[in-house]
Amino acid sequence: MNVTAKFLGGAGAVTGSKYLIELGDFEFLVDCGLFQGPKEWRERNWDDFPTALAQLEAVVLTHAHLDHIGYLPKLVKQGYSGPIYCTEATAELAKILLLDSGKLQEEEAEFARKKGYSRHEIPQPLYTMEDAEAVFPLLVPQAFDKPVSIHPGVDLTYFHAGHILGAAIVKIVFKGDSQTKKLIFSGDIGRFNDPLLFPPTLIPKADILWIESTYGDRNSPPGKPEDELALAIRETFDRGGLVVIPAFAVGRTQLLLYHLYMLMEKGKIPKTRVYLDSPMAIEATKLYLDFHMDHRLSAMLEDGQEHAFNHPQLHYVQKQEQSMALNEFHGRAIIISASGMATGGRVLHHLFHRVPDERNGVIIVGYQAEGTRGRRLLDGEPTLKIYGTEVPVKAKIYHIEGLSAHADQSELMAWAEGFTDNPKRVFVVHGEKESAEALAFKLKDELGWNTVIPQYLESFVLFEGI
Image 1 (tube, rainbow, N blue to C red):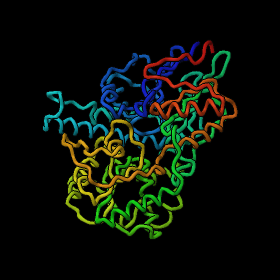
Image 2: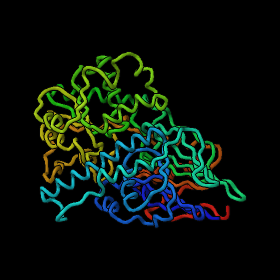
Image 3: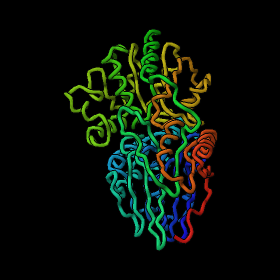
Image 4: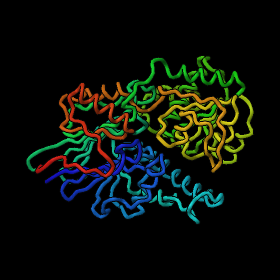
């Protein structure tokens, strides 16, 4: 019995992660992500799924970011009805993120119809909120560190990845007639010293390894990112401006709330209004109260009524009209809003109204994929296209790399060094060309690993006759 892998996404790009594994007549998918970024990538979301869905028997998720789960409603809409395995926190986060994704796509299709900037006469969403809800009954939550059988002779175990709440490294064990083989999927590896999450679990053995390479070509700058954050905020306030922070609703937002609370408590920034303008981020933040065993903040959250997610300066903005009203606010404030790469969501109207003013500051705190508005801001482009209009960028753009939820090159190497034996083959995935190549070279040069950078839709035979 042969085992093969086909790369349906997450290959040559930091988006659309999907890895199809075939074990004889058992086919399953690891991650089911949405393509984001450049138009040619996004258009892949509209293609039919590149294999027969009748043969697909399971989906295994690493974590709940849309580039790993965002295609699920389309998959189910096309006919998939099997189990979707994930950790318990990932199941709850997936419900929040997929509903929000469906809502945004409905809204964007309607907005494009009204404004007439789509090439389609009647723009359609990729999927709707109803399509997203159809995914929920298929979710099969699993605990960390406990093997579960997903098929005769195929076991799945989740380990902490340290990336976002519920994020996991996946171990798949095949027990064949004559051999036992282990596949390890890193998912997205987090930071080893994250103040919110447990460090990535070191895995001793793998026959075949998938390792992400988002920051495979760079290391975080020395120094404390929270001090850089404080400096950017103080400088903006000194100019009489307001701070806008595009942030992913899950993970980055909660880390920002933690740092802002600690900076205010320590007097490193003035106590000022912080608006969390993302219903999805608000719901995700509440999950930290429900999953105490999945993060490091239990002591803070249990220590009285005031903490990083509940204090007088923090204002949760639920309603759209409240969000729009912030455009009329003048004075010192910090607005955190999604999406983190400014590809959609409420942050767009904040950027639309704030970037033309040189007093304001926009703080970029996460990875920005090619083709996104966030990357264009980092690249210093003089205008930003929002709602079909080129908006002049006069606000000061700050970039704080140390707040990323992704391990940098040195941390990826530290995790790789946790393997006691060299994997037989290592697929370097989920990275742009330069970062994937840099990490692949370093793994080969320093650890002697057999590294491969797969391309979109490329297939490989992993094992023969197990």
